[in-house]
Image (cartoon, rainbow, N blue to C red):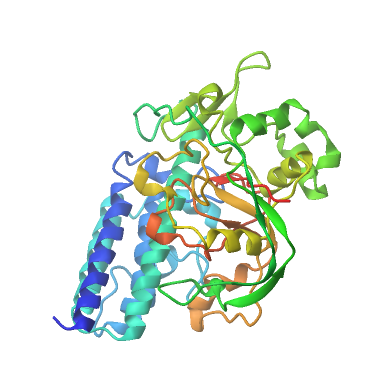
Length: 415
C-alpha cells in the first residue's frame, strides 16, 4: 500500500469511527427523546444525526462524486443549519416539529451517504476531498458534544428528570487539588495553530501577542467555591455584574448555575447531571459548570481576580499534553478539580470572539462556518467532559454569547 493509500485508508477508518459514535450516543434514547428541542439554542438528537450527514452530502458528495444521487431533494434545505449561500433553511427553534422524516429515514440517509462517501475515498480522492472529509469529521465531533449538551437540557426540562445513563455517578469528588497560582513572565508570545494537523480557520494565522506578566490558577473554580459566592449574596450585588449580566440576572431569575435546584430555601441543593440528580454535597470539589460568561466574570470580580485572556490561556496550555476528563472517560460530568488545562469544563476567557490579524475565512459557503459569528460572542477554551479527546488542542477556539449557560462552561481565574 502506498503512503497516499495508507493515509486515505486511515481517514476512512476515522470517518467510520466518528459516524458510529454519533449513533452510539443515541443508544440510551427512545424515539420520543430524539424529537425534543427544549430551548432555541438546542437541537433534537434526530436533527443532529441528519445535519451531520447533510454536511458530507452537501460539501463533498454533491460537488465531487460523479453521478451521485441525493437521498432526498428536500433534505438540502430541510437540514441546512445556517449556510445561507447554500439554501434557505427552516427557523432553528422549529426543528422539533420535524416528525417526518422518520428516524428510520434518517438512519437510511446516513447509510446512503456513508456508502457513497466510502466509495469516493476508495477512488484516490484529491487533497481537497480529503480536507473536506477531515472538516466534516471534526464538524460531526462538535455535534456529538452538542448532542449530549442538548440531551441534558431536554431531560432537565422533563418534569420526571430522567437520567441519560441510569448508572450511579461514582464519587468523583473525594479529593481535589489545592489551588495554586502559576506565574508567567509574559513577553512576546505566539498563539494560533502551529501548522501540524487539522485546525479550523478561526485558529489562523499564528501570530505574535505581547503579554504582561500574569498568574493563572492551576485548576478551575469548584462548586464549593462558587457556592461561597452565592452565600455571600453574589446574585444580589449589582456592583459585581456587567450591566447586561445584571439585566439577565433580573429577567431570568438567576440565583445559581443552571441545573442547580432545591425544593425550598431550607433544603440542600442538588445538581442535575446526565446520570440524574446528585446532591451538591457529593459534587462540591468538582468544577462548577453551566455558568454564563456574566456569572464567570461576576465571580472573578467577587474573588478579586479576573478571567484570563485567550492568549494567556493558550500560552500556558500549549506547554501541556492534551489529557483530562474528556468524552472517552465516560463520566460525562466534571471530575474532581485537578491541575490540568483540558477537559471537565469549557473555560470562559475575557476575549471577544474576533478574527486574528490577517484572518481569512474559507472560500465559498464553507466560509460561513466560523467567520460570520465574529460578533457579540466570547471565547472559551479547553474542552469539556463531553469533548472527544482528539478534537481538542491548545489553539481551539470555542465561542458562545455571554448569557449562554446550557454548555458545559466553567471558570478559571487569572491575575
